[in-house]
Length: 330
Image (tube, rainbow, N blue to C red):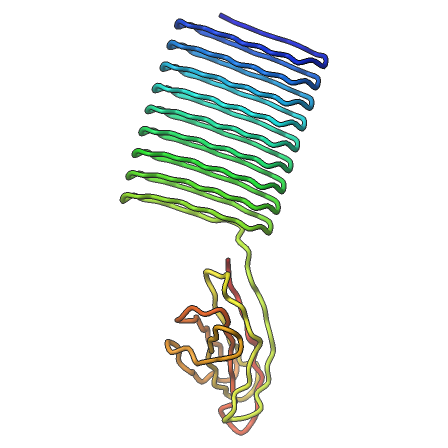
């Protein structure tokens, strides 16, 4: 059975396509102007179901596609203008389910894809402009699940991907502009889990990746915020230390301070830690090395506190100058 529904002018288009027995069901629904388009496609037995729904102008598009038995289900939903797009795709039995949902302009896009049995599930959700994008993908049995969610402009993006049994789960989530991005990926049994989360602009990024049993899990966070500061300090005494600028490290997962002696005389340096930028103590896990002229030493705090700084003094009758580098990554 093949069903095509075309509507080119503004309307409240509703289309329902039902197929109760096995077949090569194809359903395409096109809406070129703004409307409240609703499309539901149900297939209750095994088939090669294909469903494509296109909406080119602003609307409140809703599309639901249900497949209750095994098949090679393919579902593509395109929305090129701003709208409150909702798309739900359910597949209850093993299959090679593929679902792609595209939204090119700002909207409150919601996409949910559920697969309850073993399959090679692939789900891709793209949102090119700012919105409150929500995407949830659930897979309850073993499979080679792949899920990719892309958001190219600022938004409050939320993406959750759940996999409850062993698989080669791959999940990639990209956010290229500032937002409050939240991404949660759960894998409850052993697998080769790979999760990559990219955030290229400033935001309050939250990423949680859970793996409850032994696996070869790989997690990569790309485009993280960094700190890179440099300061020049001149020593004034052989007994009293001169202090560099105070550095806040509370939001950094990695942090180092490098001291390079640019003068002609040796210097002694140490790293100090503080919880409040007022009360300081020497790092108990660090030494106080002598840095010869032209030499360089790297300090990594051995304890976690909110603030850190470098202290230097000369180690001869002559003063010297040092460069202090503070570098860290969120």
